[in-house]
Image (cartoon, rainbow, N blue to C red; front, side):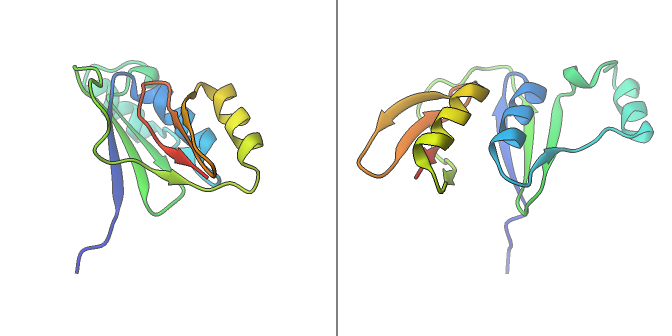
Length: 123
């Protein structure tokens, strides 16, 4: 039987999008870079973690991976995250402060997008 392990998000800039989601989700953080990981990056020609093509956000399961792809998001997501908050308005304000944009408002939930335009639901 399969179990969900990771959610992988294609994006233009993994480091900044990983920071957004680490701040957005309770108990999540960007995985720290130790000496071995920095050496691995350097061996691949990456001198700065800000340019890392794959960034891990831990705190789950599931873990979240952000991976660089060359193309921009063009159409609506085929998969999205549903988030819950005790204070919908307060949490929406906090997420907008992190860089989210409000796309739609419904009776009991809203649809924001992260800084790269990936839609998610917040109720």
